[in-house]
Image 1 (cartoon, rainbow, N blue to C red):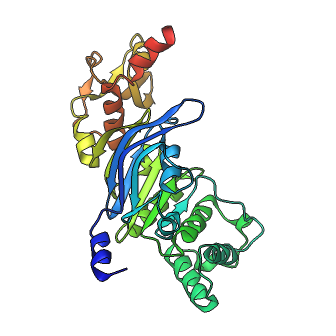
Image 2 (image 1 turned 45 degrees about the vertical axis):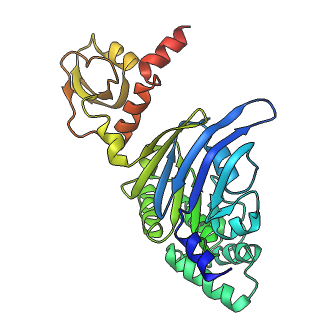
Image 3 (image 1 turned 135 degrees about the vertical axis):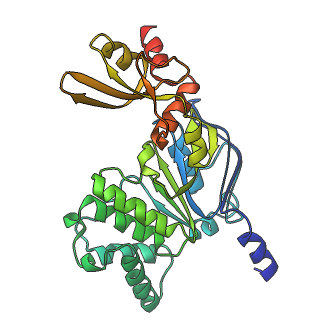
Length: 316
């Protein structure tokens, strides 16, 4: 590759998806005209189960071919040179734990060999480097079956990192992790995203964390929003409320609003929720600083995907 071509590719976004469609043999349209661009940093792909996230991840990772459209990874079209794409991409699937009887170092070393690292001396140094990077040096000798959920996810990150890819794709990043492990995992993703592209696919808003610089919302196979977390939150201003509910209000509020949290204090029930395009409940106060989760809920409610819409659908 000439220096000019190399410089041109390095200046391009790491991931470029244009007008991507995918239809399965049963006629199900999983993706419909998806457009997405990701540069350096942490990007979130957020959407409910069944939105098309897994189909998009499989196509991006060259595990299945799209029906139509174009996807390039580091300037390489996925349909033209899959090996070059895979060399630039590390993948952490939702389930990673099939190596229960092997030691951590053995697992990462084996997967490094499968990724094309055949020089034993170079590979040994690289395995040690990534284990240090993800905080597993002290347990490198431990068998996988004895790891916590958080440590197991770190092994998954290590194998995704070992061949030094420019992009890491993570599917449902914090599945099975306790709250403390989720926080540590998000911190690790923020650190790794400083000099590479991290794409996190999830249906849990809290997975994205403060380090996520841009979010794309996928729903029914379409990108319905792409922008900064702050712009998503800004759209919820005026729609998020808190109310001390009377006994007569409880059922109505739970049925017609998206509830973020419920607190019981003595005989009082305190709701925090999203009104969408409805009037606020009687006695409710507007929350001045909505959370990212509330921003997401408000956006979905504005598209007719809120609690009131679901209730209407259930009555049909």
